[in-house]
Amino acid sequence: MNNKNTLLSAAVDIEIPFHDCDPMQIVWHGNYARYLEVARCELLRKFDYDYLQMRDSGYDWPIVDMRIKYVGSASFTQRIRVEAYLKEYETRLKIDYVIFDSASNKRLTKAYTVQVAVDRATQEMQFVSPRIISDKLAQVLS
Image (tube, rainbow, N blue to C red; front, side, top):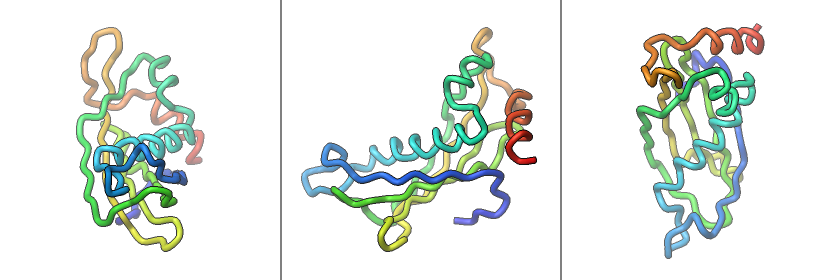
């Protein structure tokens, strides 16, 4: 994955639990969205704008687009590393992800999510990200 123009990144390690797997002990494809969520929360915490701070600032940030490309499979007890990269924030939050096998560093999955701000009071989608995003990022990136 091209990580040029990455503003901020975070990584988390996860051991694949039994309940995430199908009868063949391969991770069911729908569980990858949860792994992305864990890495996304870690990334958001890096600039103090996790979901509780989003809510308290008056905005919801629903995911409006998510793409996942499965390159390889993860299996029961395997350790994976999920890396998240903040790519855009001016009009939306676009985050790229790469999932690697922790032992071999082999890429297993790549993905991205897009979130947009929705004013909690009016339920109107914002076409420009609220200023709080740039303010919080300025504190971390300066």
